[in-house]
Length: 509
Image (cartoon, rainbow, N blue to C red):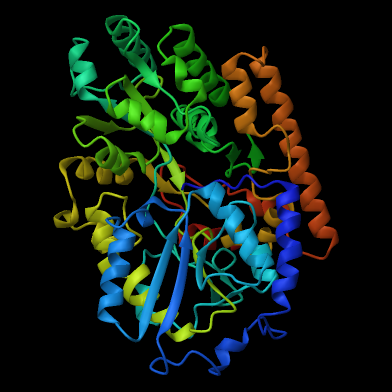
């Protein structure tokens, strides 16, 4: 779900070996266009088109999920012409299944980009086809302005994927109102400052007498520690919310903002306010314990809202921006265009039917209405998000307002210069998964006490990240790419405002 890619070199190598085999069997031409685009196969009406859709998202899980309900309605409407078979798998299983499908030349018609391979590698291996020619311009125009960008999900003028979700906050403060009330605290006044968070968490823990604690974590979840620490860091210096400062073009894992955020987590631990099992929990367990009233506070992404409603429907909870040191407004950043979503297999036998399903099912207003009414998140269609009649419960209105108040568009090097994507491919993204330990693993070691000198460890990690970026950039430049370090810095960026097309244009003058 949210979505940082933590690939290993071995997994990537396996994918690319399999990709080479698939590329030779998809009917791909020299320009990357698969044979099915020629119109030689898959005409609607000849026989029932069976479309396989695979993905790892919870909105596809179970017969009553918005994804499966959408498929049921689509199949009924297109009975005898198109039948869609949607298969949900959790991420770990899904990544393995896609690798096996590539190896056996049997990719599903529509699939989500797996976590352990980069979009550009998928594209260069020619195992996906563009959406152009199977979806309409009207479909494309329904999305947020900025949802499609050359160098991101549009390559050489061809569109390959679309945003599954709308704006997404990777970290929110969830607070259990019953737990706060039982501890004698105001259930409608969540902490706004770090001191208030520590104080309230201490009070809950003391009143809980070993059964209820101030905070529950999902520290065993991949990426959880990273999102939490960089989320809190955004409240100190919002230029550093993701470990990279796009204003200066430098890594900031050794910054005071990151260091202080780590120390906040260590202070909560020292206070005894963290539920002890948190260090071994993943998202589902931590969310369930929060919903069951075992902790007052949970730091988690936008997805936790609807999962609490689904899994512990009686829980009374609220949402707020993460506390900041002095209660100043929180600002976080995101980009609308991304390439981590669904894409179409180059080997699909039914491109026309696939396009119809995308337009009228998987990426339609009708689906996103159900998506929102289920509380999954905000849609990538702005007019739907503004329509409060689509909100399923009171918390959703708070949720929508938080996204509007907290999120701002950050600059994207790939939009400024599509050649920058070659650097991202070389290093595996700005998170550089080849560098070990990962930032998340380093944070886990610090929080668990295995790493005794946090600031020294953060400095060493930042140096490795800076070197990895520099080396990757130089390698790509030597191959002939027209890209420079300056493509990753945006001196005209005001982090409190959206970075716009006009801002990109201003850099070219």
